[in-house]
Image 1 (cartoon, helix red, strand yellow):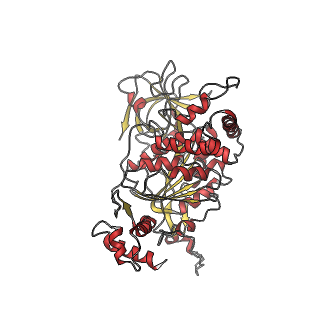
Image 2: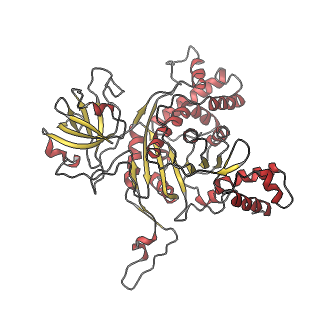
Image 3: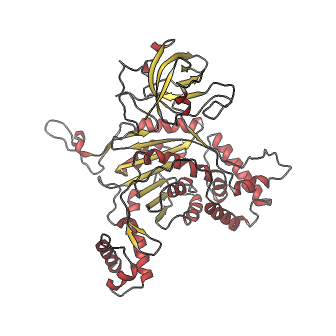
Length: 522
């Protein structure tokens, strides 16, 4: 570290708890009297490590310890600033009328191709055209989805204002931008993206639109090859060691990437090993069956696993035991599923197929999607809206290593029925507690009120089930309406639900009718 940089750091450490740090003041105490602009740049580079926010007046102050509050309410649109930046990038690459002519045809065929590859389970190679098409089609929905998932952490005060973030398979940046916009103006983000493909170029452009207190670094390598030590090697990372027991990333994002990895469990395990003691891994996947179920398989494979200290050396004692048997050599506690899936019965984990996803309100159609769609030639076999993707549907998993769960409850079979034992309750009316893990799945109603003739149908879980369970509302009353109004992941008690076996679906149905009482559990 240069003498000049060290002098700026020393002065900042001294002044941070005294008064706002002014570059024009510090330059007088640095050898060579550098220009205030030089000092300001050095402070920006060291801000994440020093925990400093840059204010509008150019001074720096310590970031507050207060947790981030949940945002609530729907995400209505993809921000105009990001829209403009993406359209500028498209115009630079393909010309001002990028959505028309040969360039428009190229982008439309590219989007069709990677959608088909995805549905067929084929890998997608991200060249410049695929990265551009991916940004056009997927960026807005991913931007919105991550914010809903972050609400689960913020709701319990587990999302801080001073964040070190690792984004594995960052892509074109939907989750990154969503995170940055979710946080308040007085948050500080040391953001590290891992992205080897041409998508990183799009990401770099869009990150330029984020707040001055977002400090991004892009590591152009794969999630499998990424070495966490790289995040500690750059300027402004003095003292940061993501492999140390008392250090690490506050948030690791693995969004829409696990299904593309050869060994998603190993990558997720490595991510957990880099967490701060109270950090979170947020993994997300599209809502389709394969990727959603795949996400749950990773979640269940890792659950309960204890993470070893990489530096601990197993030593065989006289009695034959090894130091590896000593809990003292664990870097963290056991991997815990924080949410949204639940574990309500001690010692029980689910083994059903695990297809669970959330659905949120559609976004406004971004200008770049509308332009590309409307410019489709008349002779093209095209359904209007083919290139407009504003559905916000996603699966997610929050993993921690401090034992915290969003819903921490231990049920007793003397009072409640257990889903693992549902076979013996068939044709009986029972009482149970379960989390609502879907919006309405009825055939003609995607919203929570059924939307039509079909009865509202919801996936439910208590974390012990081996077979899928669904609650079906055959007669809505004031006493059972809480099920329909409950949010995704919310816990409900059921009194007098009728347990039935659905042979067609190979699942259990809990019939909620005029004899059933459902209450939301805060």
